[in-house]
Length: 191
Image 1 (cartoon, helix red, strand yellow):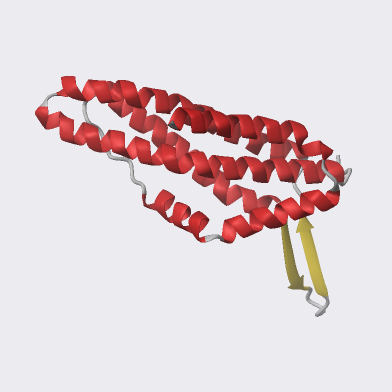
Image 2 (cartoon, rainbow, N blue to C red; image 1 turned 30 degrees about the vertical axis):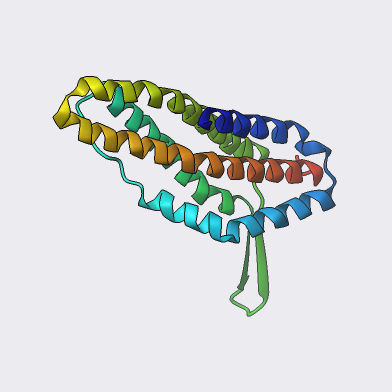
């Protein structure tokens, strides 16, 4: 089931990147409003809270399970980094000059910045997809780990499952957001 969701998220990302240029500026603005509403939603806020609470379980002395947890942690950290970066890509600051004149500063991203973030999202999506396949193999390794290591190994696998389940939705959101930003930049002929 998770593999299907991850494949769907990856397909959605690739499709949104290829069809993003075909939308009108009005459609892109409406899509951005939907994305803003999703960002303010309770489900999004709850997902962010859960992502922030996840902690690396540490070593289990079972190499396949430790590698799985390390890959999950890397994907989690990369996603958190992108969560901090995405809102900053297009930012408007309203301030006042020394003379008391209102000053509005708009920082527009370059296409290179947006493509770098989209590559990071795609790479993380592929990593999450690959780790979902590793979970089944790692679960088989629990049986050979012995009773003492099995508890830690189970905790580590559950951590990886939690990370993957949260990142599927988060990466889908990030994919839609970056595709919208790229399409907006292209439609405004800022290239």
